[in-house]
Image (cartoon, rainbow over all chains, first blue to last red; front, side, top):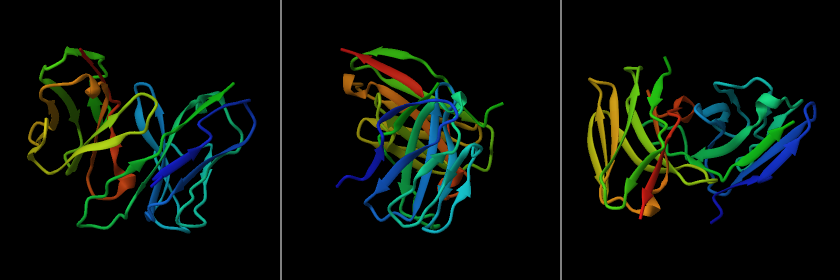
Amino acid sequence: TAGITQAPTSQILAAGRSMTLRCTQDMRHNAMYWYRQDLGLGLRLIHYSNTAGTTGKGEVPDGYSVSRANTDDFPLTLASAVPSQTSVYFCASSVSTGIGSYNEQFFGPGTRLTVL
Amino acid sequence: QKEVEQDPGPLSVPEGAIVSLNCTYSNSAFQYFMWYRQYSRKGPELLMYTYSSGNKEDGRFTAQVDKSSKYISLFIRDSQPSDSATYLCAMSRDNYGQNFVFGPGTRLSVLP
């Protein structure tokens, strides 16, 4: 089972350009998340989706957008990249947000993005 | 003050040592406490999960929660070079994934 796949693995992007980071899961999880990880700051939530067709803003949503057209895919788009968006981006998924069962998040391998 | 604090390390120990990793937090509403392990250039993976206070043991790993002190710990017994990784604590007031708060991580090296 692949779990969560992310593409590309790494990317160098010129400032002002747009880019979409792809995330696909094959576990039929309802909830999906996008985090960025920066040294000393840990994982910070960008956007999330509790089910297909719905999305929500996390702690650091500015400059990013997401969509959730189906259960499996959750792309993250940078409309006009800036150097402060240089980071490692992780996609994650979990079974549900249901009360009563622990909501373990499974993470993808990450995308390393450098904006110059 | 950050909501979750964690000593970034790096922490270097000899093989076989007992390792203690810790996090402090400020939000008394947190009830779910987790430890993730992250190998270099990989995504985090869940190690331990504890609900509310108390201890939980899984093999060489023990997680402790002290809600009165707002302090959680992960102990690794008989540490191995394969335990070399960054350890992230995470916590939440509820079971909704979007409310998880992660610490910055402690980098651990276990030397053979």
